[in-house]
Length: 389
Figure 1 (cartoon, rainbow, N blue to C red):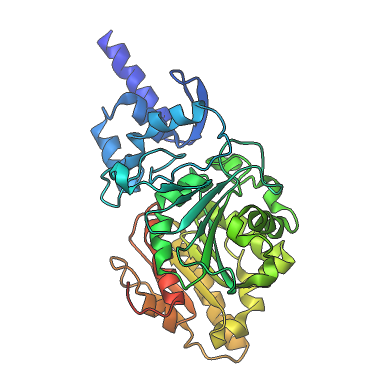
Figure 2: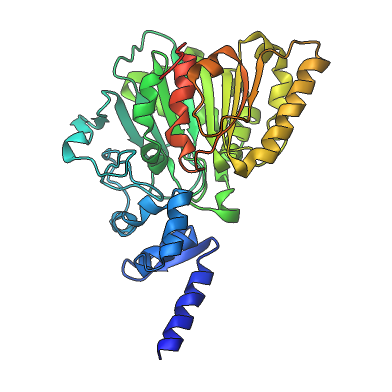
């Protein structure tokens, strides 16, 4: 009997090495999640080696919140009121917030009520929006998370940052997991953050993870931004004409959404002057057309491109750097606007590097799932003219 149990256990471990749809009988829901994480939660960390690997991959923190997150899912769709942002790690949202050291923060650190919105601990206002006209599919998670800084002035032009999340996240969990509210305190004045839901099946991976649903359509993002403006009190009456700058930050599979935002949204893309890939160049030459079309502006410093990559996308990213360098030379432009640094993986880039060079390729040893917890702040600090954080 013992041998049978051991064999069954090992077979289960083999099954969890790939992505799957996991059925959780205690809650009666199907969860599309990284298989090894879901099953490891059920096994209760009995495999020390697996646990160590999950920690290295940046997935372990979510195990402790896994069942709690699914209880929240089972509770059904939101009633239209905005929920308290939390810092739970992958997948989905939780009613707890976690700090960078993995410790759960106290109840007093949670956002406080302010009418139908929430005031984040940073002082900014966060809206969790449901029921937008422009939405990617039928799901219970938010269509978008929107963060306004505490000193937002509607009479001034808007700086817009769009964060496109990767697999295993939805708009809300990405906002929480990456601690984007804290990071956006480094952004230039009047910067509004939008985390759009671009997946048809939020939080999915594999083939389903790349399904954009309606978000791949023409002018979808332009329409979503207008929906957001119309539903956000401080932004009512605004249009894209009131937006001065748009920056795109893409993590991992978020490149799907970033591609569409660049190429399928004519009015929206006209305002894009900054693109940042966070270990996100999975489509090889997918951003080459935008780089080629804007090579003079990039060289002149009026537009910016950053590619921060781990080993996951290193090959594609280094090849992209070579193509961009050739674009500059072919256009008769100097190459001093381009910076490539593959020698300081163990150090975070400084905002000054991104400020002084408008085309940056930087390798990092920061784990794939932790990169978005660190680099949006650096990108925004650079945009604000800061040398350091």
